[in-house]
Image (tube, rainbow, N blue to C red; front, top):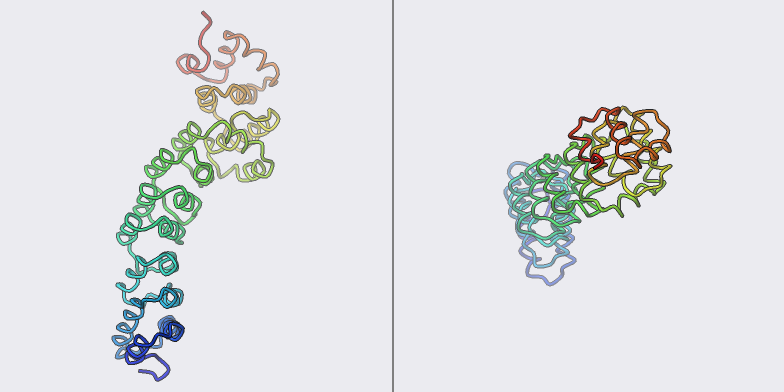
Length: 316
C-alpha cells in the first residue's frame, strides 16, 4: 500500500492503545483515502478490512470521524455503510443523509427499527423515493414527517399524503409543508382543510408574511391549498384579497363555495360568490340573510340543487 495510507498493522496497534484521539486521526486518514480514491486494486481489500475494523471501534468519536469523511463515498463496502447507518445518530446521520449505498429496502428497515432522529435524517436526503416516504409517514412522528413534507426532493404518493393528513393533519408543522407542495392533489387539500383547526387557519390567514408568500406563489398552489392558507375566521379584507388572487390565477371555482359551505365558513363562501357573480360583497352578505335569495345566488354561481341543499337548506 501507499506508505501514506494506514495499514492493518496500524489498526491492530491502535486498537490495543487507549488513545482514542490517535484512532480518530486514523479514521480521518482512512476516510480521506476513500474519498480521494487513493487505493489501487491490490490495496482495496486491505483498505476494506481496515474500514470495517474502524467502523466497530468502541469510541463514538472515532466512528463519527469515519462517517463524516466517507458519507458520500461509493467506494466503501456497502456493509460498512449499512452498519454505520444503524449506529447511534451521531455516527449514522451523515451516512443516512448522503450515502448512495443505502437502497430503499435498507432505508425502510432503518425507518421501522431505529429512532426518530434516524428518520429525520432519512427524510432530509436529497432524493427520497416513494416506498421510503410511505414508511416515514407510517412509522415516524411529527418531526420526521414535517421534514419529509418540506423536502422538494421527496416523492410522496397521494396515498402517503392521505395517511400523513390522517395522522398529523391538525399539526401545523405537517399541514403547512404539505399545503405548500407543488401540484398538491385536490383531494389531499380538501382533507387538510377539514382537519386543520379554525384557529390555525385564521392565524395563518392573518399573518402578513405568510399571506404575501401565498399570493406570490399562487400560480403554483392548488385551490385547496390556497383555501388552507386563506380560509377560516379571517379578516374580511384579507379574505376578499385572497379570493381576488385566486380568481386572477384562474383557480376560483364553484367547488370552493361547496367546500366552504360544508365547513361552515360562511364568510369565505360569500366572498367567493361575490367574486364569481360580480355582486358587491356587502350585497351578497345581505342576500344570504334570506335562504331563498342565497339559493338564487348559488344557482347563478353554477351549483346544482343537490349542492345548494348542502350549504343553504331551503326555507321551511
